[in-house]
Length: 146
Image (tube, rainbow, N blue to C red; front, side):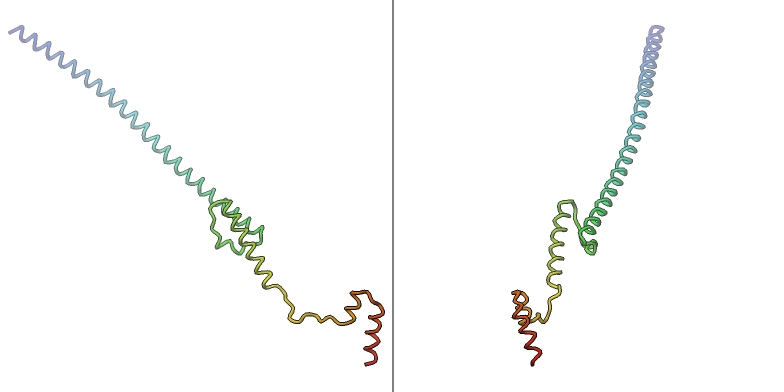
């Protein structure tokens, strides 16, 4: 029985050593796991910060483009249309400005001053255009004797 006890003791010791190695390996694995988890959390925070920065940049770009739209409209005398003009890029802005300018010019022409009574051309003006001095004098003298 002493051999059995020795064998059991050796087996127990081997088993304890294996258990110890497994625990050590688990501790190393746990340490590595915790390090990886910490790195992953740090990366997630970095990504979240980058996403926020990207949103801020996009908002600033949109604000800058809207200011550019307002300035372009103002330069072309179309600032009254600023509330209704919705464009997404510079090419579209150029097209809208061109069309609005044409419409405004057409409206100006249509609503411009059109005299109701056209000036009648009298004989004196007719002779004046022809540079006929004799005709001009004749018209003036004819008015004296009427």
